[in-house]
Amino acid sequence: MEEKLAPMDILRDLTPTEKKMANIISWATQKTYEDKDGYVHVVFKKNTPKKILRAYKNNLDIMLFKTEGDYTVEK
Amino acid sequence: MDYLALKKQFVFLDHRQALVQVHASKVKNTKFDIWTEGKSKKYRGTVRLLEQGLSELQDEKFPPIVVVAASKLGGKSYSSYDHVKDVIYFSDRFDSKEKLEETLKNSDFKARNIVEVLRHELGHKKHWDSVKRYYKAHQSRYNDINEAKHNLDAKLERYIAKQNPIYLAQTVSIYAYTSYLEAKAVLSLSTVNEIIAEVCANEEKIKDKTLVRLIERELNYGRKISTDGYFA
View 1 (spheres, one colour):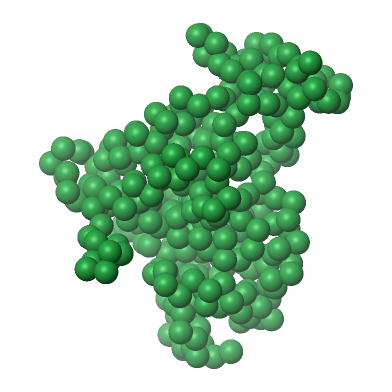
View 2 (cartoon, chains in turn purple, red):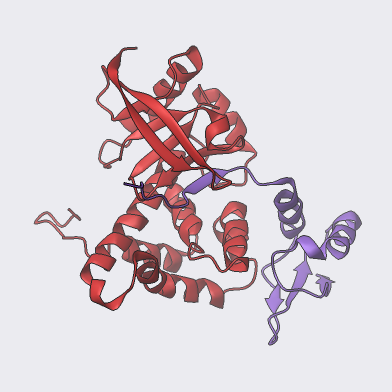
């Protein structure tokens, strides 16, 4: 008889792509919101380095949420 | 370290959903249900690490834990839970407390030590045990256990969906956040699995007590309360 198998819940390190996304998102604030069409507008912390903002704009394809790249930086 | 001569075969799907078979021996002279694929120093160190963690969690009921080669579980994996067989697999990557804690220090998980990694896996077990109880109680309503799970998880999913888009990253962990988004992207039925396990890893550090309460309620579905007020 064939054994029943199912995908397991595996605790694993993030992939380099996930890590890159996580690094960008760690600069986002709780003011980040989703608009009525489901697009995420990221509100970054005041002191977010420029390279993080650039990385966000250049890596929209790796963001796991719907976004057109709109963001603001806290004043 | 002594082992029983009899070996048992364990079969599971790895991180790429490839079939893996391991033959493991039960570790003797321990009060815990630990099995190991190998007997080298590395495996012995991992078994000792598990014993240290389990001895601090004596009130909890663990399924068998099988120590397997890291390459079999997936190179970058730590541990896993198989809900069909009710088995925890643990990678031989970490054969000492120091090595594990050094790696966890900079990780994206909630867990920072062996006890919290074990609590993470136990969180998965409690979640699936709850799903199994729910399915058993409502079997006529659902075609399979996954359909029942979807319904049981719905309340928690709705709560998370109502929060801001980076809520999980800030409230639980980066790992819970990426796992949730990835599961959502592929329409998986496991969207809340890692969130539950991450909260279980270190419940005290979760600031949103509503989330903790929702998870506790889900994990305790159908559990009997004994006369001393604790869940049986």
